[in-house]
Image (tube, rainbow, N blue to C red; front, side, top):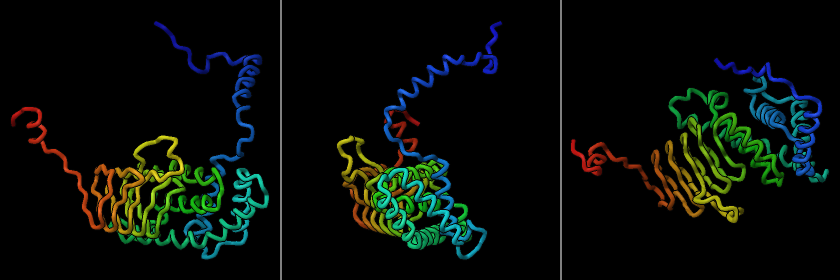
Length: 287
């Protein structure tokens, strides 16, 4: 009977092999002349500090944040912005703009939480939304990242939303434009593309994609993702594609709908599945 060696019995690399491995990886690393010094751990710390500053739920119930917390967040943001912005004065401007915008982000995030509470019969309080709902957490991360993006900070906004994506399963590009009272219920596998525009009082369920019709590189910078006007509801599994696609206000897009053209305000778009009789009939069978 053949015996397979376990990992613990494999001979370790000899020093010469270490040198060769380091040399080859060094050659690959040389492609990056000035890689940004950012880590996933730093991005997580930034989000944790920012959320703690915005909501008393995450700072032990203390109403007002301490000056130490404000200073700690400022130092962390400055460190991370400086990793992607070489000019010192420009980096400080970005940090100042971001910090001054936090009260507005807190207010808009509270509107998101209140809308989720009003929509969801399973929610028993706004506090529950803030503490437990992944859709709220992903949207808050997006609002922080979007603020940095509008200021002109490269790379970092995308890292923030991708960190939230890892934690929540919700993928919101920081370049999307999202209005007030935005609700994500459940949220797993939602994708919102870079050029999507979402109005006020919009609600998305799990598995919704607001995507592009194609992924051609030459379309970079063009509007590739759909627009949802105010008071739109999109149910689970729906896919809405294309930069020219607009869902008019007060419309409902049903579950599993595939939509690539615009619909007028107050529309109801539903998916009609074939029943068993229709399927068998199409195959020439009989019940």
